Structure formats: C-alpha cells, structure tokens
Image (tube, rainbow, N blue to C red; front, side, top):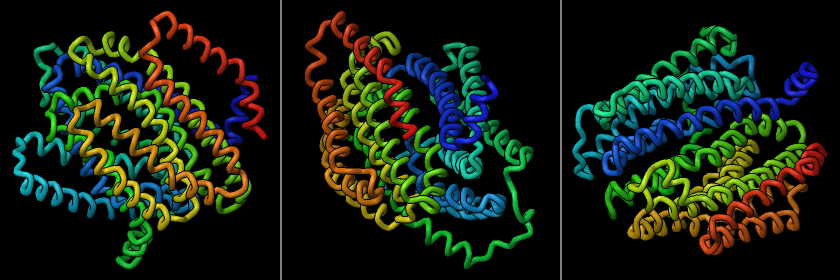
Length: 476
C-alpha cells in the first residue's frame, strides 16, 4: 500500500510537488508563526513595527534586484533540464547586476526621502536582498527540475534553528538589531545548504561550466524577463509601498497591527504560494504539449484556490478576536478587524496570482505586463488614501481594490485558458466568493461565540462530507 501511494506521487509531478511543498511550507510557516509571536510580544508594537519596516525594505529592494528572472528561469529549466547548470550561472550573473541596481536604488531612496538608517540597518537591508537573490536562484533550478523536496527539508530545518535560538535568548537580548542578526545568520546557512543539495543530487546539469555566457545572450534573456520585471516592480505599489504609506500617515504602531494580521494568515498564504509554486512548471509543460489539459488543470486549480481559500478565510474570521488576544495579547487588539479584511484580500489575490502563473506559462508576458500596469493604477490611490485610516482602513482598501481589479482580470484569465473556463463556471465561483465575503465582514460580528463555534464545525463537516465528490471531479 505504501509503495503504491509513493508510486502514484512519483507518476504525477504536480501532485508530488504540491504535497512536498505543502508539508514543507506548512511546517515552516507554523514554526514561523510561533517565531513571529515571540518576536512581536518581546519587542512590543513600536519596536516590532520598526523590525517589520526593515523586512519591508528587504522585500522591496529584492524585487528591484530580481530583474524578473524567477519565472523565466524556472520555465527555462523545466523545458531544458539538461541545461539547468547554464541557466543557473546565467541567473547568477544577471542577478549580480540586479543587486548593484538595487543598492543604487536604495541609496537614492534614502537620499530623496531624507531617511536616516544606522550602519547595521543598511547592512541588514542589503545583506537580506543579496541572500534573497541567491536563494531564489537556487530555488528556480529545483522548481524547474520538479525536485521540491529540498525546500521542505531546508526550510523546516532553518525555521527550527531560528525558533531554538529565540527560545534560548534571554528576553533582555531582544532588540531590533539582535532579531535581524539571527534572521541573516540563519539565511546564510540555509542558502549554503541549498547549493550543496543542488550539487550533491545532480540538479545542476549540462555544460559543466564550459558554455560561455555572451553579452548578447544575456541581453536577450533580460528582454524576455522584462514583462515579469515590470510586473514585480508594479507589485511594489500594492505590496511594499502601502506599508510605507501606513508608516508615513499613521506611524509604526499601525504597521505592527497590519503585519501581525498578515502573519496570522500564514496558513492561507501558505496554501496559495505552495499551489502556484508546484503548478507553474507543470503548467508551462502542459501549455507546450497539451492545450486541453492545460485548460482543465488551470480550472481545477482555480476552483481549489477559491474553495479552500473561502473555507480558511471564514474560519479565521470566525475567531479573529480570540486568535489575536490569545497569540499576541491585549497590546495587539486592533489587529482583529484588520485580520478579517486581510483574509479576503488573500483569497482574491490568489486569483490574480493564478492569472500571472497562467499568462507566464502561456508565454503571454506582454499581456501580463498590461494587467500589472492596470492593477497598480487602480490600486495605488485607493491604498494611499485608505492608509490614512490606519491598519484597518488599509486592509479594507486592499479588498476594495481587489474587487475592482477582478472586473478585467477574470475575463483575461478565462480567455487565456479557453474551453474549460466557461462563463457559468466562472460566475458560480465568483458568486460563492462574494457571498462569503459579505457574510464574513458584515454578519459574523453579530454572532455569539457558541454560534461561531457551531458554524465552524458545520462548515468543516460539510467540507469533509464532500471530499469524495471533490476528488472525483479533480480526477476527471
């Protein structure tokens, strides 16, 4: 029985990769949630807000350094696995240039905004960007080779090490600087470990380093990556910039409330990221080989994202106040309503991510870039003005902006996928999502705790009872 189960996993790359990434990411994210609770409690809202801002800067300037290479390298390796070593070297060369660009962009940002950073914070931001770039380059190879177990092993090991360090640290040692030092130190170890695994298990295949990377070849590759890069840069307007808006308009304490809500959503974001990471290489191959299978698989993943996303979002919303009070304490009480809005933004954003995945796999980078431009233009003013009402206002702004952007994103996704994505299917799916959002945001607060517990169990039992039907539909 066990051998038969393992054989099924090996024969279905998407199922295997999704299972591996789910186990690894779920374990890592749960441990990360515990770590975040420890850090947030020990630093308190103001210091935790400062720490969150540094992580925001790392993420922001990593996007600048990435040059849009991630999906392109994964796609290239997936389609030409015997040349994975060449694409890895090409990626490192280009990312080196991207890191220089990001360092210059950081210096210009500090100059024009008159921000004063300590030497250690500057080192932490640039060091974090550099390590993120290396990790992503290694991950692209493993994902393209559809060997994602090393994300599981290394990810869980690194987060466990992080947790052990924080548990052993005296509370008096917890400062923004010490927490950042631990973050960077563990990141160095896991990046080195990932490279050792790539070499030891022969995932770097091909020319043995003999094939020359020409300037023209690098230039051509960058041109292919530019639509992805534009998408990443535009995502700053709806990813990292809103945190800066929030800090500018209402202060670092509101940043702390907003980010603790995000951390509580780790199980939902885990599912989204895992599904898309596992699906993209298989999606790229299916588009090139079997358009009908490409269409059906995309439809199934969309249904899976929306269905489980709705379940997780309603479950989190039912107990938002209790979760915040139990995990973070009274100092973070304002996080509860932020959490409710962020739950639904995460589900809606999952649709946008699938659209990006699908257009990338279908070699429609230009269309993806147009969607990204429109998304940023629609969302940025909404997020800026909503951030004036603090973390809760910003979270509500994300939901409003997402609903407006669905008006063009969903038709684009439907047109790209084709046959399997009928208007009936699309309309039914969106109706379920919107009805669930309305119930969660406007009706749950009126329910007492016993009624909320009863609703959670009823919802869970409904999911459990319908599991066989879901599996049957998935296999069709």
